[in-house]
Image: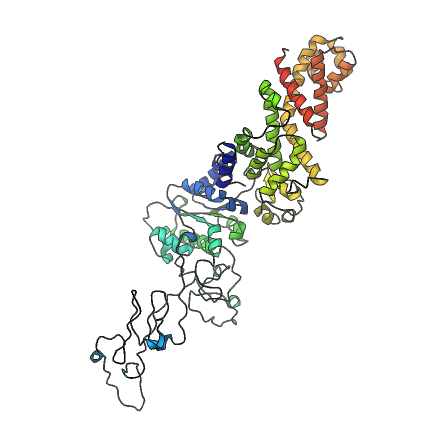
Length: 611
């Protein structure tokens, strides 16, 4: 799959303007489908492949879909927020030394030698001697408590002689998914100018002008999980490095079941509400996105909003950014969410459109330059064959198609090496990524057994059929040419491309030959049709001339060899060439480069001859 970087690179190498993905017919069709669902009041979950995120195409499509909404909120990714540094736990003597937290979040560095001086941003705290009252303005202002003498020695820490006063460390704000200042709800609330706890309620609040479409890049949420707290591994910050948020769907916010914390059933984890223990693991990716889907659905239901007045979510995600069951649950849910898959979106027209500017600057085939300017029609046919071959081999992989169109000179014997070079420069799926394909037909979405292969780009839906990526079966190295099964599969794809382009030209040339042959008959037309037509059309029994025009190229050639038809030399040569080409393509073989060149030249010259 391709993105802005690939297009810019292709344009720099060729001087051609690359076609933006948003202008391709298949992409525009899916963008229209997403926009229509959002306009109907539905949430949209758009699932894309891993390569689309890496190339930047997913972000481009996300911005294109979100920009179609008149009122929208683009939730910024976590990476755009400043890192949140969690305050460390106070040391054993923090409460004894009376040190206040400094600008870095810790206790006073002077320790016990600093008897409770106030922190100052411009320098260390004041260090007083024994006469220092620990920060109080005057010793006479200390409160006096008239307590009865009951024999107990009550030390309130206000004694001026001896130990310094005991001043508690500043209270720390609890951290965790609910209190993370850079969490999904916090960032959404910031865009809405409300607190995180009020973000969902604000979206459905009565009297709000316009119900926005809230856009979320789920892959950015996954990549930032556990990396934005700034705490080292193992610290108890409420967000685990490399793990998800740790919130279990259906459980109170910030509270984990005993099985997740490692504590016995019914026992407390020892962490305050909203803080996750460091040992908590195993929460699914995208739990915060799932929670937003469910909380917004519940809020919309409670508010009783009609579809036209509902806030909606637009979430673009990879499979690994979400809980495994979430796409199917949303699709089979209450009908408030439409799930779109990047599946069967691109077809032949999209790939051909993407490589069209590249073909104009691609290297010419060796030995064919003499035809380039002298016979424009022949060159046009060869260019069509070349374009269709690239499309058929690469399928919906636009990046690979551009690379191959730039590298390949159009000759059949150089295709395998050029494809190996392009696969080596464009990392893609490997054979281990693709499971055996037990059927050919593609459904509306990838089945459960193919979803991981689809996410890695190993399996695609191409023109309504399942298809393995070419990198799964072709070696990705020019020094290892395709052999055996890989060579057979490549030959079949090239043959299909040649059939698609040349068959209409062959049929049109046959019709023109048959019309000219009517003036070169050596026998009555009815006799010739009865003697050489393998299947005379019954509905043309009373019209032998029309029946003669339906004769195939093989039947016309047998009539010419048998003497019933005396074609001119040029027409006879064209007829033999048409028979050979049609027989080769009918058996899913490939025309040699020399035969293809000769066929293109003869087809071009035949169009210049009068009937």
